[in-house]
Image: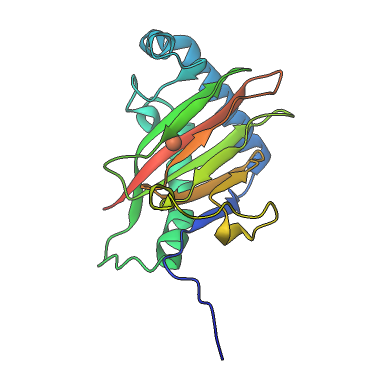
Length: 206
Ligand SMILES: [Fe+2]
C-alpha cells in the first residue's frame, strides 16, 4: 500500500505571549517602542536612508533590554516559547538554552514594506506583534526549496499548507511567531491606515 510521508518539514511556531497581565504589558511595550522611536535620531536617519518607510531600531540600538525594562521582561517572557520551539524541532541543545541575543523595534507606516530576507548569525528568529491595526500586513514565508522548483507545476489554489510555496500569516496583537532563522520571509505592503508595530528578535543557544 502506497504512502506519502512529509519529510524535511519547515516549522512555524505561534502562540499568545501569555505570562500574565498581557494587555498592560503590550501597552507598556507599545509606549516604549514609541518613546525609543522618538529619541533614536540615528535610527530615524538610518530608516530614511535605507528606504524603510517607518522606523526600525535594527541598525542603531543593540541595548533595548538595558535601555528599557519592558524589553528585558519581554526577553524573559520569550524563553519558554523558544525552548518549546527548539524542543519541537528536536534541536540537541546539549545543556544550552535558546536565548534572545538581539532584539529590535519595527514601526511600519502605511504603505511600508519589508522585502524578503533571512536572519544571519542566528538559530531561531521571531516576532511579537504589538499594535496591528485593521488591514495591517501579514508576514509571508517562502518555501526554502523554491529555487529548486524550476520545472515544478504551480500548486492548486486550495493546496494544503505544507504544499504551498508561500504561507501568509495574519498577525494579531500579543502573538509570537518563531521560525528557524534561515527561513526567508517578508512583510508585504502595509495597507492599514495606521502604523504596524512589532518587535523582532534573534536567539542563539547559550
Ligand atoms: Fe525578519
